[in-house]
Image (cartoon, rainbow, N blue to C red; front, top):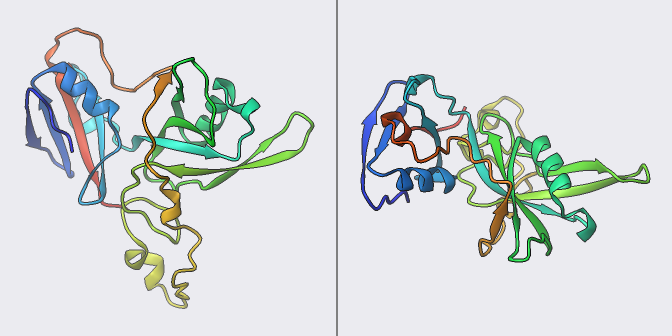
Amino acid sequence: MINPVKGMEIKQLPEGHFLLRFHHIIDRNRALAGCPWSFEKNILILNGVGADENPIQVNLDWCDFFVHIHDLPLSKMNVGVATFIGNRLGKFRDMEIDERGCAWGATLRIRVSLNVNAPLKRALKISTPLGGEHVVSFTDERLPNFCYLYCRLGHIGKYCEVAFAEGFIDLGDDTPYGPWLRPPVSKPGQFKSGIVEGSVSGNWCVGQINVAVRIFWGI
């Protein structure tokens, strides 16, 4: 839940958008850095609004997620591989490191901005230095409602339009996607190469404490 220390105001806009006005820039930056947020298990998409921007025209198709990359050898847990894979998924933001500046463990945890209109990826083939291929898989923290049939955000399988199509075969629990796409919540570490979109400096322009919001109900 977005719980600003200094408070905020909410104004409803056309096309299902909202405008949040934070009373302090620290609260605003924490809200942006804390994505993804959800409302009744549907994703809330936030983006900063500049003083010279129209909040209706702010792009609200992208949202930051914490993604765990599985099946990587330790030698590949570096910023180069994290950036490459992150940009294949969406837009790489940063990666988690420990207090010594190292990334290691069962998974590589990165922050990626994903297009909410596109299906989530569960795996990816990457090339090895010897010319072979290696498959890595993904889990995404704090996933809101998503379809177990096509892995699209915003609805669950029983409300998917495909399920109402003539000739559709109900797969029951044998769906290609499932709750296993949500990893156990890990203890947050430090992040490297932070590029959180919408972050600002200490300038107190009015527009820089405003955030545009869209509740993504699906497509």
